[in-house]
Length: 378
Ligand SMILES: [Zn+2]
Image (cartoon, rainbow, N blue to C red; front, side, top):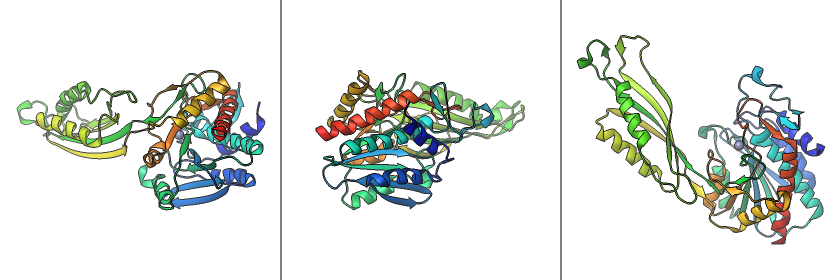
């Protein structure tokens, strides 16, 4: 097994870097890249930290995009190990962030080191771009500011490889060329509180919600398209009630989220929901939050390099699936960059005992390295 890779991954996993704090992971990355000739910039704003480390002075720009922050471990007593004291057990590296996505970050660092040792003067430039708040809240900052600074400096990322855990049943069986959009809402349904024994004097917001949920559940938002599955609506929280069995509550709050394809837009979805509320004479207040708009890479050059590289290493081709949550690829894609997501198996991400197979990591390193080699030859 590749001990360099496991040791490097472990040195990142040992750092408790809960969003939006990098907490020192960038120091590990910077000290790894510096001897290879990379120049590193640290860019901080709001509560997000960013590392932008680059090498080369000619040709198109290839970017490895990732994050060093992780989600909380959840109850530590449910883990087989201390979530921030990574261990290899039965060929799996276990620890918070193993699959999402410190394993992939370590893997890319080793791949780029091996590649540059063998190809000291590639035909393109390489950058490693990491941030500390991919998993965290928007208010703490996202990478959009750094992208804007890059663009203001006249910089353009040609190819972006996002190391998020895209694989499903086996390594590299799935890549993503885009992601759906995400629109959230908080709906307050206003009713009229009163005694349950006097139905004529109350307006029960829970009953109103029942009918409304049924309609929303059955609504066809769009049919999707060749890149995306149809838009889906999900309710994530409902709260209402005074706690007493004999009181009809005065209001109800419902939180929902829509994952939408490029056949829908923020505007079209809002309009549809408001129409449904009005048509059903519902007295409501609503607050919206647009988390992401859909993005898709339609150019094929980089995608084809990646598919070829996967096939060269593991002997099969990935399927393309643009599902899953949002990713930081959404900030890069609007530049016109070709964005492809390829990373380890996503089975255990954000879960108790998050893990990644150590042979998968080694193979992923070989695939990442092959991508760098194939790009250099095309
Ligand atoms: Zn992630």
